[in-house]
Amino acid sequence: MKKNMNGSNKINIQKMLAPLALVLIYIFFAFFGRKFFSYSGLLNILDSSYYIGFLGIGMTFVLITGGIDLSVGTVMMCAALTGGTAYKVWGWPLWISLLLIIFVGTAFGFLNGFLVAKLKLPPFIATLGTQMISLGTGSIISQVRSATFPQRGSADGWFKNLFKVISPNGVSFPTGAIILIITAVLAHFLLTHTKMGRYIFSIGSNLEATRLSGVDVDRWLIGVYAIAGFLAGIAGIAYASIYTTVVPAQGMGFEMYAVAGAVIGGTSLAGGAGSILGTMIGVYIMSVLKVGLPSMDLQAHYQTFFTGFVVIIAVLLDTYRIKKGSEVSANEKNRIESE
Image (cartoon, rainbow, N blue to C red):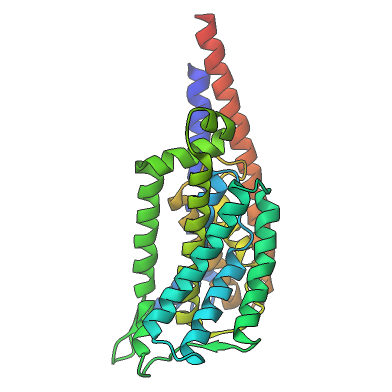
């Protein structure tokens, strides 16, 4: 029993590594970065976390099932381009254009789910194909032109307040952080307190056993990819709100940041394990790196380097966790059999 307790303690200690890393990285940049430890620095961290945060939450659902979605980045940009074109070129009201962004993202999510669940394509191949389709679709709809959303102070300037409110005296308030936190709480509840959440973890742990137990696996898989697509649409709105202009043929690579955030936060690439809280911590680690490195006069591409390094460590820890978890289960089984 003592061995089992030690194994469980080691696994629990690993869950604390990501929060500890976030604190240490933030403290490091606070001491050595220029103007990093300030209100404006905190706002920059939050601004850079919004769209990756939404993508990361959706990716967590997919990864827990043992799949992956390589299309979320290009789907996000395709949806934003479509909505921006509808607003600027087609003359649609802004609120309908924003709903269109969510619809486009969700539609691609359903397509991914259909390809994986019904046509039995490997998630990597299916979503890689959708990545190319969404990348081309955005360029076709926008006619390879940038899509511009309303700026602060214009007739539809309320759009900017969705993710950042600036008071008359110039003080900014990150309303986007509230939206992201609410989304994370709802996603956490869905994963931990609903039938869908139980089935998602079950599918990731053993898909065939879940299917044989009578669960409509295809239905839940489609739902998972639809959630990822829906959140990609929300991420598109967040991106447009923060940056105003959306450029065609972009988005490739954003899915890797979503995967990185989830994996750094403890979501297993093998499926069956993960948490929304962990993903949010992983996302904020990458946001701190994105803001902190330039504060030390290092170029943005250093973020990519260090993020890859951190992801490798996270995957190694995940492999170690799975190995130790298997050892604990085997020891428990042997103990029961010996009794």
